[in-house]
Length: 251
Image (cartoon, rainbow, N blue to C red; front, top):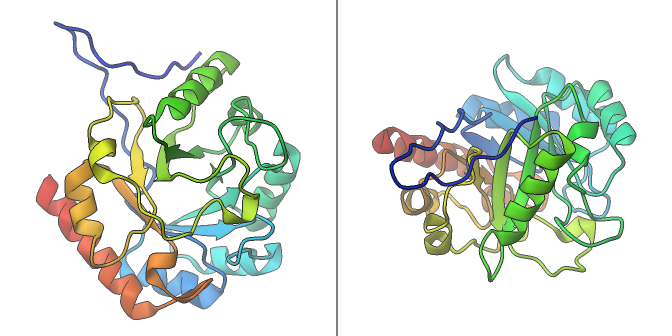
């Protein structure tokens, strides 16, 4: 059984964190043209949102066309919140997704919750878990990861997004433009899983965010849009260039 890494005690060394599934993700893509220019700009992952009620929701046929247009090496990620595993896997097969992102609530009950055992139900595809920086930091994320490990599988990657209310509907769980507290995130003990940062990232602040948090990857949606669901080519190019320059400088 895979176990999440815990911070090393005195005199020991924590196991190395595996490489992330991506470094720069453009999420909430709704057209094949947007997917292609995101990839051409240098994004190594593109996200397709299948969450009902989101302004970035995309239908399966359009997502399939967009995913098919991506060059080799660019990861097509499906974003879901509260959808049963069989339905997720059916969409993944139809679109030919390369990974699944669970974006629902970490705790509670209701249609917008993704329980820890969902990871094990999605065998065959990498799972990325969106978690949220709350007033108590990543405590809820740590509980979820521990429960997922007890159920048999932890996610391959985490995306840290801004906090939302515990009763927020699935369609407003992401892409809000709200920022994570970078300082608080930088002070969090390691989780043993590659981290990406989302939430309010733009071409103007992504480099500073990478420096402040030390993350291995970044994820943007609203920060590179001309309107919800439509990406602005100039903003996408500027975001990717700034992020990649920051990553190079930090290595």
